[in-house]
Amino acid sequence: MKGYVASLMGENEEIRYLTRRHWFVFIGSILVEIGIVIVLAIITLLVTAFLPPLSAGLIVIIPFILLLIPIIGGTRDFLVWWNRQFIVTNRRVIQVSGIINKNVTDSSLEKVNDVKLEQSFFGRIFNYGDVDILTASELGVNQFHWIGDPIRFKTAMLNAKEELERGGTDYPGDGNIPKIIEQLEDLHQQGILTEEEYQSKKKDLLNKL
Picture 1 (cartoon, helix red, strand yellow):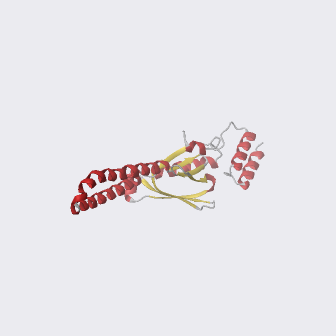
Picture 2: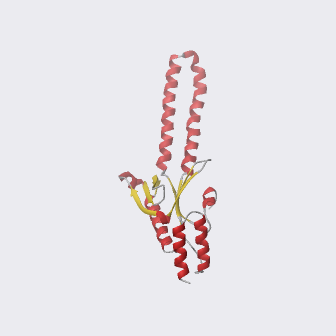
Picture 3: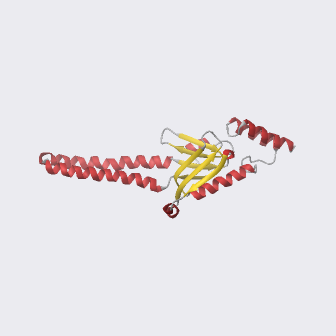
């Protein structure tokens, strides 16, 4: 695991599942640009037909200009699509977007109250859909539209949440309670656990000593 996503991971945090928007989104953007090129090509032919003196120059130059549109636009669309990622870790759900300027939104699994999955008829056939995550945070609802393999995304998130609530993989260790409390404190300082959540879990662990 390398790159920008790796830099977002906290200590002992692991990626459980990563997906992107369905490839239909990327193809749709390309088709729009191809449509624009076709329209411009038709306009160019009409212009050269009615303006004979300019025809030779236009016929030579304009095709190269039109060719740049899908190449540049397609490259940009691919980078936008590739860099928009939806990630489930053993602690949170993260949405990352942006090619150079990054926009990161995450929700702690502990604050996830409910998950809503919507798939249309074609969504079930081509394996895409929308996932709405209802949280107790200020954001309220995180909406992930047109994501690929939404069922697997939802399942990975619910499994990670269950493990977190059991105190399993979120705080890995050998059963050493002081070490686990230290890890809880790190999560609290990172803002993943609220003061109330931190004190409650710390109290439960101290009672086991």
